[in-house]
Image (cartoon, rainbow, N blue to C red; front, side):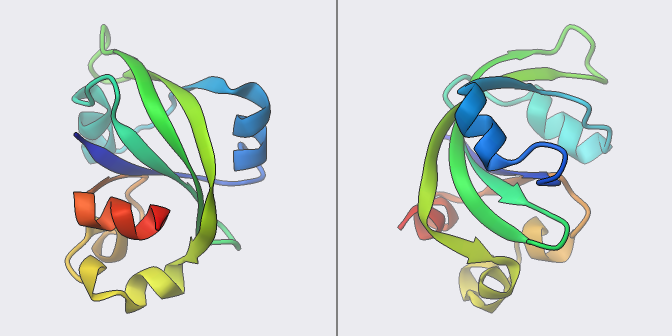
Length: 126
């Protein structure tokens, strides 16, 4: 199983928007590393929905439904909503957790699609 964290500005597309829509297309990612992650995601990939900006908080989950990598520079990922996290996780709490010491989430702050280990996923959803 693959696990990732997707970042978004809540004033552009929030988890409440995602809950309302139930499914959406995750596109518009331009960072080459983030694009590579999206392009290679298998169907069923689980991911954490993270609000950037002033919030800096992981708030919910989602699942990858499909990936269209016809244009490898601009993959289009269809995703469906999961659930709101029981306990939202702030960036401060993530940074304080030793499990994330070597994570790109902490080390590469501008990366909008971040791989997670199974242990990191479990920490978010616990």
